[in-house]
Length: 234
Image (cartoon, rainbow, N blue to C red; front, side, top):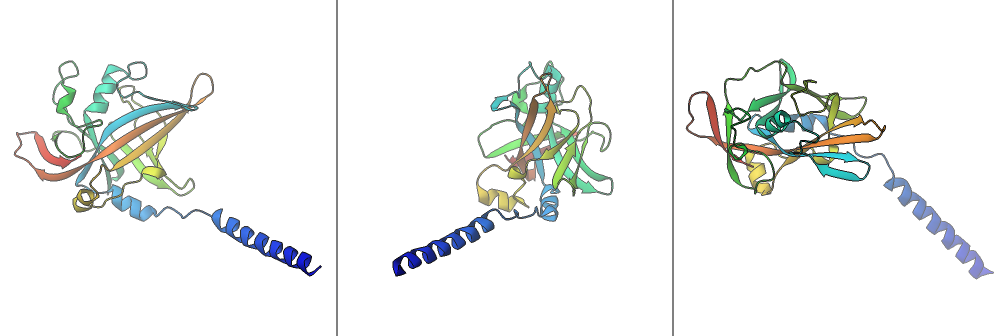
């Protein structure tokens, strides 16, 4: 009888301990430190270049960075020849687009621009200086308190490769480093990802993922007029 009571007591104790552990494990996740992320995004010494564009329907994910089934030649050209900065100034929070290319789509050599899955290390980034600091080509970004996300939106111009509508920064790939020294110490690429969702003709959810890779400015090189050449860590 005593043994039965002891077993019952141990069982109740074990159940209580398991219940406590389960309760703690399913607690509310840590909130996003939005001020920290805003500061990490708004770093002028860093550009972001498109590394990869993927399209997901269900469990199927395909890369479409150079796929003319989903992107026009002009859209592919722009994806390969632009660099971006997240700016936070008096004009609002802007995703500033800087062209790398100075040649037309029919004559441009993509190897001249910084993009894609290059080996990690020191590269060169060439930015055209004569580009308007405002206008229809730039996007916007901001924290949305209701959704607890950083929303990102680009103009719905048919020439742009971004999907229409509002996207958001993937919480799994927020920026990590606040300066070049931290990026160099990490010894690996830094990435963020913008997700944009829509519904296709079959009413299936389609997710476009734009992975951008950081190009940290090490120094400005001797440059011709109208172009800024940088040595960068990419």
